[in-house]
Image (tube, rainbow, N blue to C red):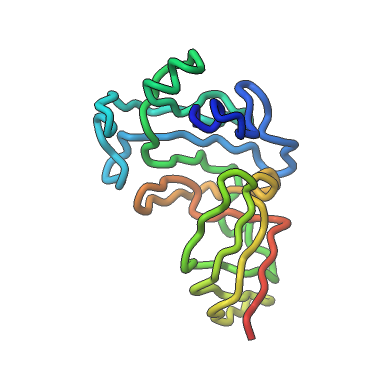
Length: 183
C-alpha cells in the first residue's frame, strides 16, 4: 500500500519485478465490483469511489493502493481501500498440477502471513496426502514458508473459483513451502 511505502518499509517498487519468477508470473488486482464478493462496494470507508486496480502485472508491481492522504504524499493516483482479491488463472489444467505424491490442503485454521517479511506458519485443519493415486486424510500439522519467495515458484490452475473476497485459480502448486504433519 501507499502507506507502507510512505513509511519506508515496503519491499516493492513501482515498475520493478517482485522477484525472479521460476513459476508462472502472477497478476493480482483489487476488484471492488466482483459480483457477490465480500468486499464489493461502490465506495470505501472514506467515500472514495472504488474501481478495479491492477497491483501486480505478470510479476511486476505496477500500482499502490492509496487513500487520498497517502496518494497526496506520494503523488500517485487515489485508488481507495482494498477490494476483493483477484488473481489471474494460470495456463495449466488442475489435473496436471497434481503429481503422484503431494499434499492437498483443503483448509487452514488461519492463514496470516507477516506483511513485512512474508513469512507464514499456518495450522492445517484438513488435508489429503496423495501417494500413487490413493488419498489419506490428514488433520493437524503446519504449512510454513515465505509468500514473497513461494509465490515466485508457484504454478496456477486454469480453473478458477470464488470464495468470500477471493477470485482466482482453484489450485495453486507451491514449491519450496514446507508441510510438517503432526503425529
